[in-house]
Image 1 (tube, rainbow, N blue to C red):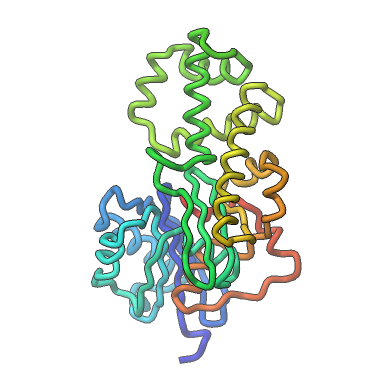
Image 2: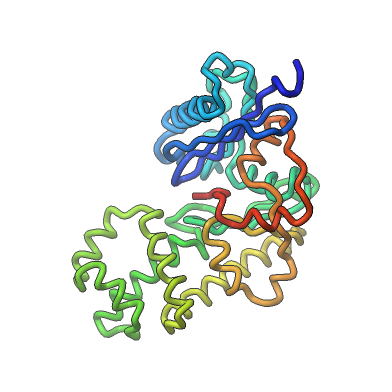
Length: 311
């Protein structure tokens, strides 16, 4: 079969959505699509359904039908895939693809970020957070244990702290600022309304307030500045944890990374390198595909905003 007839699909299954990309054997882009979240707390069967859904949507976007599923080699990275039992369950799926490779979303993000290199690391700062690296092909994980116990320096956790600070400021416990007034006004200056909202809020809901903190920090709001400074300290600590384990080249990824980078501690910025490709392309590499060559300097143009993913 000619390279142009071979199909490779990369799927980035995060907590917020599931994204697919299709390339041919030459690395040429054929199509992309997006579907719902694959977070495994919703069940691995549900995750499989979402993967199948985004796979079909991606093929449709490329002008193909389901008849090519059996010649499509697929790589999948799933959010929170830490338990070997979950990975084994997914790998035992009677899938419709030519082949299937499954790993965590952090792993495919690292493969993409470093163009398939067996050495290098990433710091994912999005709705959640995770430090991950490869050292001679062996994986190293720092954080990324979920919203309840981890996700430091993430948009969701900064959002939680912003809400916690705002409600305490209205009670006279903490300093009032323009930002805390703004946040409380969003709840009608009612602590009860905020509490009722928080009882059913998801990490992406909290992440909205993390991005509000960024906006006010840019206006030198003292409370917002303190929250972002603490966020930068936490992100720097994660980078040092990776460096201590031998990962000395770290690419920032995730939709909160660009906002956090200015707050990193100076001694950790020397660890930063440009991201080359994103998580979906990392999944394509894992599936056995190839990627197009980057023009000099293009890796820096790709920015932070294409999801690594981790939510």
